[in-house]
Length: 164
Image (tube, rainbow, N blue to C red; front, side):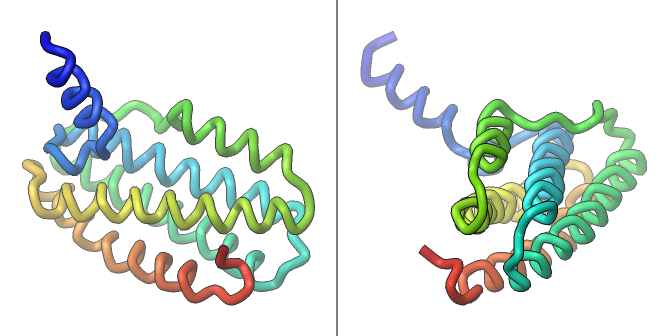
């Protein structure tokens, strides 16, 4: 394969799955990993943050992402899509490690930055599956999750002093 083709193939591989098509089981796995990351990072920051805005947001993340996990699981079962228990990606695990290593306001700021990036990825994932997915129950769940993720992004973008 020519060098240019390898570079293009590598760039495509780095794009979120939703950007260039995905299977229903890949959608379920990616959505599950996303929700697991959101809940894990939010529970971590809830143990130490003194910031009321972050505490409120993180509490909402735990609740909303547990709900979206349940929605995707139910839709997957209805569609006959088998899904393994969610597992975070290496990148998500690395972000949790960085969050664990940070302290105080630095942890709060890192959490906010990570949430912004994670929610943009989640929005791409759910919009992509809602538009191009093959399993109707999962498409419907993805479409219901999109406005919730959009609301989270709006909160993150207008969250006051936590923006960088």
